[in-house]
Structures are given as structure tokens and as C-alpha cells.
Picture 1 (cartoon, rainbow, N blue to C red):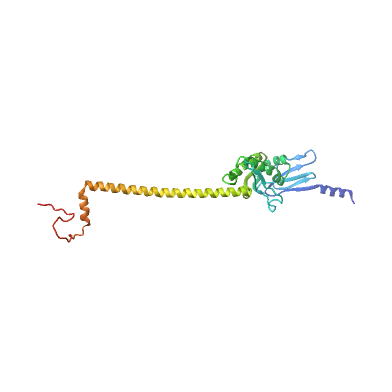
Picture 2 (picture 1 turned 180 degrees about the vertical axis):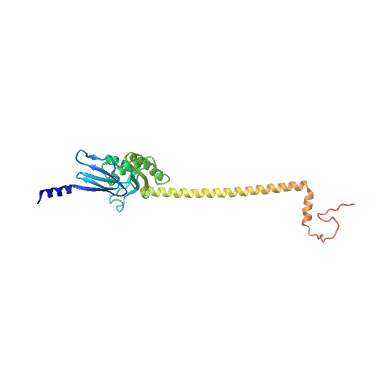
Length: 273
């Protein structure tokens, strides 16, 4: 076999091409020679010459979503749920989803920091940062707050902490989501539900009392108004007796009473001449 041909085959085997797919940015890493290290320039979409010892790593520049969950049938076959405690030390757990992308200009800096691809960052640094922030923030809240009215507030503060940590390295933590309910011990959950039910009953009772009071006040106001009207009317009639006689005449049907005897016609006083 021709030696030159063998050399050519070996050289071809050592030479290859790397590709950056659409929606990604590439980072070229050279392991040998004077140019060994991470390139300061990110690579756009395309095919690049990658000699022996050169590798291209890809990071997504479009929004991706990953869910850390205890389920073995979702993002990972392992249990990736987050475990944390409330301010009283009560153990809680939850599934959390994260939406993220990579700043193309800062991609080399991200690789220099963590020396791994997107999957490695998700499984390691990103998950650790979310867990640490969740543990720290939840430790200042009670279980009823975490499970109830301040649940979203907790995750919003965790998101802000994690986003601020990764921003200098070009990892954009866009949004954190609860991927289900916060899991609490069954006994505690029953207590919370009973308390909520009692509070609802109390609110309903308060509303009923308020309604009864409002109706009573309305009746009192109506009675006071009617009494005032009667009083005004009585005062008017007492000061003007002619009004009473006028009203009687207005209601008279024109027939004189069928009675015998003498006396004046009722309600009608005729002037004597």
C-alpha cells in the first residue's frame, strides 16, 4: 500500500467539520497547540472546520423550557424535585419549570465559567442556583403562606435571584413556573384545608350578619321617615283645621245622611245670615 495514501487517509480522519444548527450559537474550543482554549468569538449558524482536538459546543439562543420534577416520565428519569423548608422547619417539595436562553455575545464567557454544554448547565449550575434561592427565600415564610397567598411571590423572588446571578454570564433566566402544587405533609394539608373552610364559613356568617343589620337599619330609617311624615301632617292639620274639612268634602259622595232629627249636616258648616 502506498505510504502517501496512508498518510492522506490518516490526515483525513483527523480532520472534520463542526456545525452550528439554526437557533443556536457555537463556541469553538481547541485543546491543543498554541491556540488552545476557548475562542472569544461566538459562532453563528453554519459549518466550520474543526481539526483534531477542536470541538464546537452549542447553546440555544431561542427560549427553551425545562421542568425539574419528581416524575420519571418527564424531562429526566431521575427525581429532580426541589426540597426545602418553611420558617418552622417543615419539609416541603415542589416541581419547578424554567424558561431560559443564551446571550449569543456572552456565550464564550458562559462556557469559560462552567465548561459544559446546555444540558450540563441545566442539570448542574442552574438547578443548584434555583434550589439555593428557593431554600433561602422559603425559610422566611410559613407553610400557609407558601401554599396559599404568597406562593407566586416566593417563586418571583427566586426567579429574580437566579436571573441576577446568571446575567453576567449570558444565561437569560426568563421565567420560573410552579409545575404543580407545593407538596406538604398530608396532616398539615388537612389542617390548612380545615382552616380555609372555617374562614369561609366565618366570612359567610359575617356577610349574613351584615345583611340582617343593613335590612334592620333600612326598616328603622323607613319607620322614622313615616313617623316624621305623620308628625308633619298632624302639625299641619292642627294649625289648619280647614284642610281637614276640605278633605272630607272631597271624599263626600253628595248624598246626605238618611237620619231623622235635627242637627247640622256632617262636615258642612253653612254660614248663618
